[in-house]
Length: 439
Image (tube, rainbow, N blue to C red):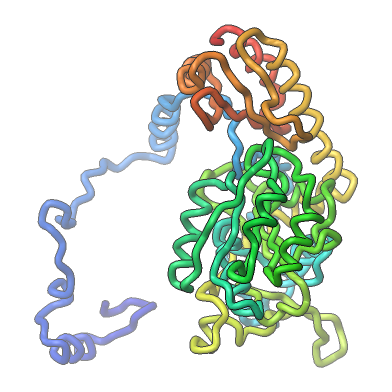
């Protein structure tokens, strides 16, 4: 440790600390199996930059060349080059959390604009400057509901169609808050409101719905779901994404209390892991919002300025009064989403969303014309994705499609799910042809 700029201990200080804890060396603090312990040599031959590039190219060439028609919460849209060029500036890449507003005005303003975009899309007055992903945002909504609702309930109701990983994260959070997760029935791809109304009672603290649903269906009953939740004093939380929100019913007008979901549909390629969580809510929950909030104020000279605000909600400021263990955000990723949204503009964002409706309908019609397949399975409007019923076992069809270079989801014994966006729409003809061959 001696000489380290990050832990500047002298030899004497290091020796004193080791003596205090009763060990002879720093290595004694670690129990590393000999088989994996570093022996001083990496075993990697030195190469030139050109040699490393060539080796990486050969390695990447071994990857399968497949076109993904995958969705279910992870979506790829074309990301314009301006997003890379602006977000890769050093002042953004090297920035940590913007604790010092006097040196972070540019980044803080960008995050404020991101929040403002979410406010416009959701109709809710408060939005934070991002969460880890949609799953953690949903989980934070559940714990918020537990804090703010007057009901003594401990049940969180979620759709029967909910991505497995998202539910697992939610259950993990709920276990620590003594909450229970239960599912309500779906009816032809959307919520079964009658079944939901029969289930909701004093024991329910939050009702969660998604629009679009996991199978890509437009949820037609938001107002009715909101009424059921409100009648039982349960928090109404809606899951969506920033592209879909530009054309769907405004959540606030349907009585939604909290909107969660993904903003990573803008500014990011699909990563199937890393995300960008949306969290917006009504003003009455302002002091309960998890994560970062950027506020607009004035500096000493009366000019508009931006700063992180209401930080006593957060673990790193006052742990015993924190409303969440999350005390960071996806600032750089939120910046990318804001740049992408600004590049599209309101009209461009709506055009992109409308394409998600038209392209899904057109592709479903073409697959439906094939012998041995029926699409869409649900008689609904769809956004980006839809399900396909196959006469043959779905897993076998998916395997055969993979052999021809296309990836789709298997969601049932005879059900596939297909997602189309501007990113893969150019291969739609080839997908239809491949479907025709394999079914």
